[in-house]
Each structure stands twice: as structure tokens, then as C-alpha cells.
Amino acid sequence: MKTIFKQALLLLLLALLPALCAAVFHPLRPGWKSGEVTLWTARAWVPNVLWIDARPAMEYRLAHIEGAVLLNEDGWDELLPAVLEKWSPEQKVVVYCSSQSCAASHEVARRLREEAGLPEVFVMEGGWEAWEAAE
Image 1: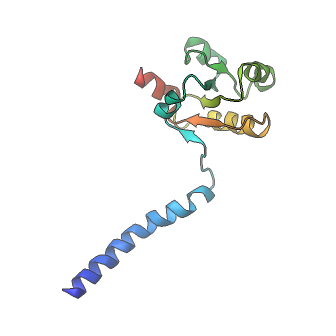
Image 2: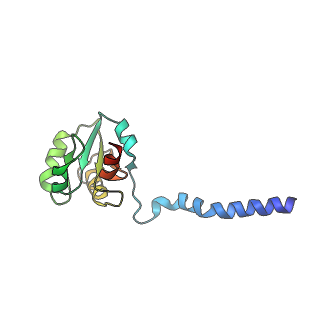
């Protein structure tokens, strides 16, 4: 009986080993996306949220989260002053783009943290599609 228990425990540990390694080394992987929040977390922060739409201007004009400010890579220099004017220190900034796989929101969030010096900048998981699905 002891042998069966030991073998089962060994198999369980071997099965958990990849998950443990992923949990420990996840932040070190290239392409790891930090600072993501769920739609529900971001909504819980309202009214202290500044929404940033990182999609192309045409998509923003068609539809966007109410109160969101357009800021994308193409218009960074022209659009950033409006964002900074609307932002206040007690706000968390939540950036979104077209979908979970859209890299634009991560790049805009990075630049807001590193170049504009905003302290609490997050990317909304699932992007615009998550917002639409929840509406």
C-alpha cells in the first residue's frame, strides 16, 4: 500500500512540475504582458478610471467606451496632450484596443508609464470585444 501511495504522489508532483515552473518563471518569459485587468475589475474602479482607446481613429469614431480618450501609436504626439489634460492623479488608466491579441494597447500603456510617467496604467483583457460582449 505504501508503494502505491508513493507512486501516486510522485506522479502528482511530476504532473504539477510544469505548472510550478510556469508560475515561477512566467514574468521572465519574452512577450509576457503585465498590468492586465479584467473588464469587471476596471468597472469597479469607476468613476476613478480614465479609459484610453488605442484603436485606429476610424474605429474610435464608430464606437468607443463612453468618456474614453483616443490615444494610439499613429497619433501619439498629437493625442497625448488631450489625455494628460483629462487625467488626474487619483485615476487609474485603462487602455484597450480591438481584442485580446491586439498589441497596441500594451504599447500605449507602456509609453504612458515610461514616457508620460503615469503611475497606474493597465490594459483591459479582451479589449473592445470584451466590452461589447458585456453590454
